[in-house]
Image 1 (cartoon, rainbow, N blue to C red):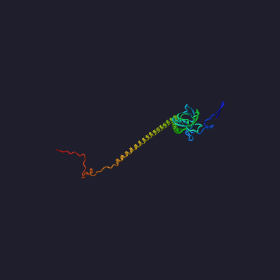
Image 2: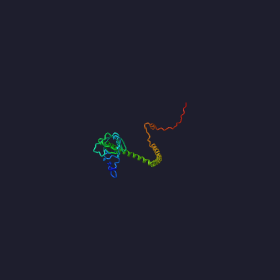
Image 3: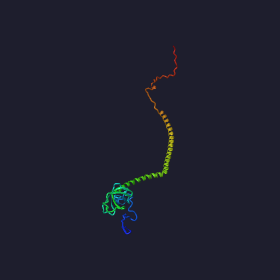
Image 4: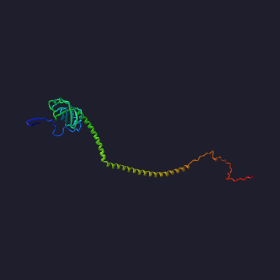
Length: 255
């Protein structure tokens, strides 16, 4: 892009990503890791720096840099200077869409005779960030499973609370039905006992009658004991004499 300022013509390079005019860059990955994306490389813009040009505050459009931790190592090149080596920096602080780095030396990636401006785009390379993104994605999958479990429990609780009155009526009706069934069974059991008692009374009379008849028959058909050797009738001596009369007439004796 060329701008005209008075008698001067200034040429500037616009460092913005070449995005499609409409739509999205890719399909939604549901906030999980995308195997087709290189998370080791990303770009950022220097939003602020100290006077010594050793400490930079970098703004990023992709907030995956939130996974950085203080002390993490990060390498970068200055945009449009890809032919130079990587500079080494260390993360000092992390904010949403911002992170601060400390750079030991800009010599490997930027000429010392040039002024390092705010707004410069840096192309970063960090294996540590890719590892952190992978770990965060796996941990997020576990969180999703836990969330689904909690949602299921909450749904069950909400369903119970919302249907409490219906369940209360249903439970009371079930117990009333069981009570009525027990009462019916109770009445039937008592009626059966009364009927059984009447049948047993009739059976009792019949059994007593039969027992009395059996006692009479047993008494009639009892065989008497016989002892011929000791029978007093066999001991009598028949001498052909008449039997005396008893009581006999008293005899008078004279003295």
